[in-house]
Image (tube, rainbow, N blue to C red; front, side, top):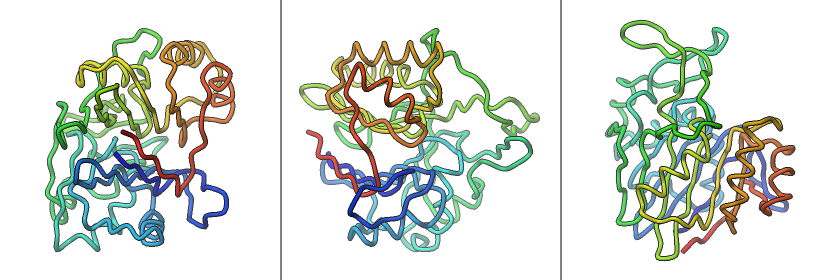
Length: 269
């Protein structure tokens, strides 16, 4: 599997790409191509063009969840994909309207608009994209130290409710030696994601982990998360996006972390 970072909060030194507080990855696995999240704006498209990546050739567009820093790029993407109408895979709640302090923070396209431009496939269950690459679906939140908490309000048919971001998910790639995991924001808990990926793939060893951990300060939850990850001893650890420098630094003391920026290419086998 080859992973190219099309968008992140940071850019790599000596490569001249655009960065923004968002996420987008181009994934090549077993002869297929996937776009995992699409950032906040059209910037990921310019980066892809500069990297000679044709995103219109994607076999699937995958959404980690519905927040606008992961789905905002669907608007410009829809303009160039209308004829090909690629498959878009997400949780059934990913395209619902959501707000925080009265501001819209969800996908700028609603379900009907998405269906005009993409072939929509919604699932709560794990879905195998290739023989070894899996879209994990809704993440069971089983670990006591990763107790879920709401962020804003989700609009449902029977009224508004606290948004627990149940649509949050990730990808896992299975090899003979273990698994590689790619996350968006890990609202479901990075350790819960790992536990679910192990269960679905049948592999216990995590070889690599890339993505946002949604950890900003050192508190009890963060400390227990760091302890969990330290026990995993993940050789290829790439926290980014919604993972603060403070948390990266604390994690690095137990399990060396590696730098992430737009333009990073990872070859994981």
